[in-house]
Image (cartoon, rainbow, N blue to C red):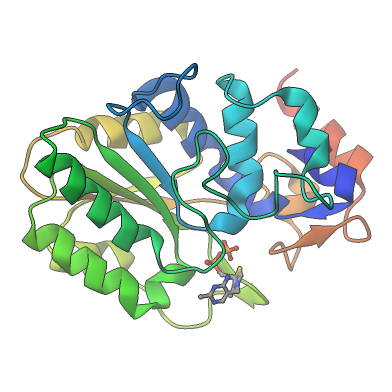
Length: 254
Ligand SMILES: Cc1ncc(C[n+]2csc(CCOP(=O)(O)OP(=O)(O)O)c2C)c(N)n1
């Protein structure tokens, strides 16, 4: 992701690094898909509601062999299909992003459609803490519980930031809110792989309720100079030293 963002000189790298552990667990441990046939009808769906986190999805789709690694250098470039937000014309992408607050509603529709079609596929949707300030999210949350969408799993990326800095409106207590809306709710450290895998396992239980995983994540996780950025929402080359960031990331894997 760092190399991707360095190509254009900017990107949503903080969020991408923050959500990377969750995407790794989903794509390598949980989701049912066919990398040779990304539109396989029986696949599990994964919706990235925050389209601007596309940098993390492009990286995941390369790791599973749906996209080519050499395309990543085109992230955000004029004319590139790997935009800074998601497009559903890209193989492996379920929803075009950009306008926040629509992912959960679309996930509810997909889960209902799959149920009607008699499929056992599950629907996973990532959404942000900022999207908890949008009414559309809570309408969808209410309907999911009402329709008893057992196979719908929402992963809420609580990274504490929003465009200009810290989250604006008070959203806590997040987990209690999802419980009150009728969701089976699990709260975890979203950068702790054991906890992520445990929560996904827990979400397999057939309780007849939709599942919410409230994941506390750190923007820029794994790269201290980005973790410490005051405004980690959108980073460009003037904010960080890319070579230093890469060195820090590599040092974690020595
Ligand atoms: C409906 C809508 N309103 C505003 C925006 C502009 N916008 C893009 S990213 C962003 C920040 C949203 O914060 P959050 O969803 O928590 O994401 P993060 O801070 O993790 O990037 C905003 C307001 C948008 N994309 N869609």
